[in-house]
Image (cartoon, rainbow, N blue to C red; front, side, top):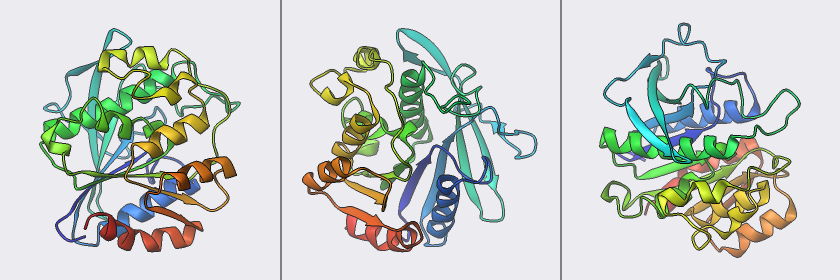
Length: 266
């Protein structure tokens, strides 16, 4: 992976959020990749439970100040950055006072918030616009966590003509069981501003977990997951795409990523 630029997107990562299997995998994988000689940047949401003083977050003025149109409303994009100094890893936080003042994308009973559809759109567009402003061309974008599930779709449709992403490969990882319930059925209409319609994303007419898995997988170049996480119908769909697919136990998955990356970037 020497000299390769890797953009790693995770909905949670240590040490900024509580330790879960997902946040630990995110940190361990990022740390492992950071020793391969490549350039690594991590993007994650700046949830309300992240202590900015303790973790030394600071706003990047030259990257902040953009407005993203979400449901015909201009929403300010704020970019904050911090470093995991021991590992020499730079972390970028996508922030907005409306979407990320909460501590999670689920309420205390594990139910979806009503505006999670807009939160997903904002997160995807915020990452892409920030990377454009950085003028940093990623060889690989690795997405994990359903919050980033729309990122492959946006990269391959709205931003398909952006030269900065013309050679970028996308991997999506599913590391957690599907969520229950459905996002707002207005999701697709809210994406019309970005010229994403039923033609590009028929799955999003019913924005449930299974269809998020389908849309992310269909627009990605490769997919990975942990054994026992996805239901059989999701695994069958992913297999039918005939794309590179890695299905392993969690502890084995991380060890096989470097070779999986190299094969994808040949």
